[in-house]
Image (cartoon, rainbow, N blue to C red):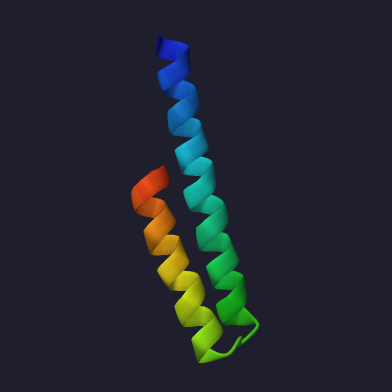
Length: 52
């Protein structure tokens, strides 16, 4: 049971780290404001479903 909990926690942490890194990359590359807004919206939607 402990291994399952640890695996789920690692998966959540991984998603959050990758998503934040992707959005930061979009900021650095100066993507358009609409693209950035959509990315942030999807991040927020998925973060509440997948984990924080």
